[in-house]
Image 1 (cartoon, helix red, strand yellow):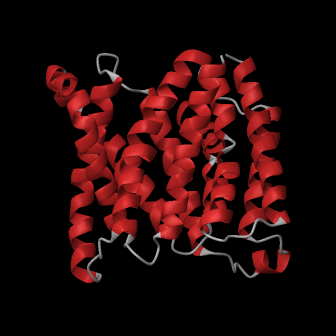
Image 2 (cartoon, helix red, strand yellow):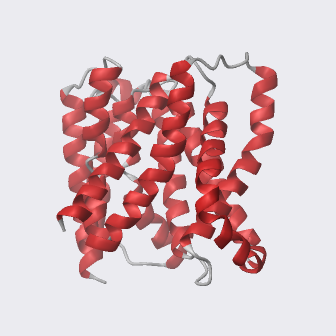
Length: 295
């Protein structure tokens, strides 16, 4: 139990660093290039561990190529790239707070796609989460909300959260014969292939990246630790304590991001962030509590 919780906390802490990199490198490396090199590193590091499964399961991969293509385009090509775009205009704290709203979008999309019933508790949870997000992007000011004067990065991150919810629903539909490692490596590679034309376009239109020690270290971090290591730790956690308990620990993401942003990026933690955390986490717990009871 303690080991499983530790793995979940470690994975969440590693993922929080992704938002620090997204914000910290917003002037050093363009968003598409950061996403591209992140997945290059992830593929290179993951390849020796999963290539045998990929080869063995190649017939299944070919059979489900459309599903894998859609899943990888949403989860790999678009999702993290939008996070890095968002990091140019909003804080790491905002990025992590909006990131944890994805379970609510899963509830909404499950209703639209699968016709799942939205209960009173789920509805209350959605209202609380939406209120928390609105409070966050408006910075607690009704006037700024009415004038729609919030950071565009908050909108990019909201779009990324919706895409991650879609990706999560697609992952649940993973074909049985495909192992997790083969599935993950296939989506990493496909997502990188889909990202390549955008990388070329950015490379032509934006000044070249200067690969200094900070940039290289950050790319290695998001490629190895925020991708591969966090994924392995998270899976180990789920196998020990289950997805529900691990999911609750994931909601501590803004805590890790907030502390890291305070020390590394000199970001200020304001009362609006604390109120937003309270509303968003309360809403997610209420909605998930109902979902868990109905299983």
